[in-house]
Image (cartoon, rainbow over all chains, first blue to last red; front, top):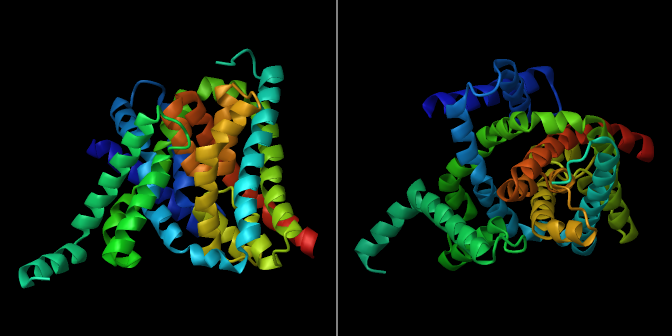
Length: 119
Length: 240
């Protein structure tokens, strides 16, 4: 488990270092994700069972990790006072419209080009 | 308050232990409620846990900064967990690669629609330009959205609020929208939720179906990249 955690932290650290030193507009963890995917891909399947177990445990409770930030947001709803109506509608209707639109486009494109995988 | 109780309170509010414990406990309540609702998206565990904790902080009068000193250990794990998304991505690699061209096209369309619809709604309702610049990157993960908002004249702290609220809205109501539109393909469902509701949407997708989770993680990462690269350019052209 410690080996797996070290690998995750090392990838994040590498991502942070690269993002900051090159001034990339991506957060370190997203670069770290790309880096780890590349490493796992090169090493081939089945070699990193320990990492897979730790990753699955962490991701099963991914939502938990957003809770402290969500608490902060709910205590700072007064920031919305600047334009509460437009922001609320953009957040709610905008997000749901984007999900619906993207879902329809992706489903249609996947049906025509991605093969029969409507599982 | 009796002196020994007061002393206990001083200890509890100064140590990260209490904040950490209530955060995990509130999450477990959220997960139980979600399970009791048979995993219905509306019973979103992030929303339930956050509301419980907000109530607790308001009632006890504890400052958010004090609470966060404990909760930051949970918050910190967001970084390694984001890196860990590589595992389902690699596991689902065959499916992702087979869908490559379709996903790139869906990314471009979805990314433009997510930013465009937010700005259009805000503009139609008379929001000022700083608010519009804050709404534009709202589909991306928090650090990306804050960075872009700052770059194009928005308000970073407001961007954080808007991003988290969009994530909760998308994760709790998005699945119903997709069902209504008869989008049944797990790949498309995951991709849509990850693109428009970033990590909170991805967390929801992962808890329902691993294929949906992998496509959500991919969409989240790709949309962060596309929005960070393209939105500042488009914004400069449109407002220039």
